Length: 146
Image (cartoon, rainbow, N blue to C red; front, side, top):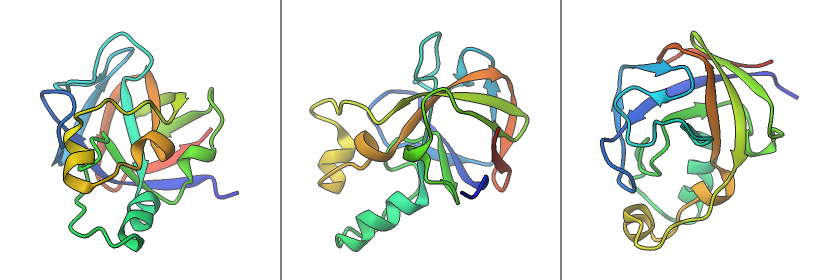
């Protein structure tokens, strides 16, 4: 199994349930998440990650115009099948250490993403982490499965 992946984008939003916008780099705070992001806080879903591989599946269904952040993921990744990582797996991403806390999620109704895209892949293939060690993550940073 390939142990390294790459950060394609870091995405942020000030409120929940909306499409996130890409930023050049993000400051991730220990036991909080991405500074300035609506999903940050002292809970188990501080950061959300989704692989570009999942975007490709949606595109194969004929859905066009998918930009990174459209599924409200904080980090768009490449090279690791995220949803196959067991809960408890630790990832070194940029300067941070993150621990996988949840695979997938319940989708709330009235989600802007599902409305815009027709369906959301996050509930099945997105993963959530908490920040064990804070730091900066930039586009292009390596993701290492520890």
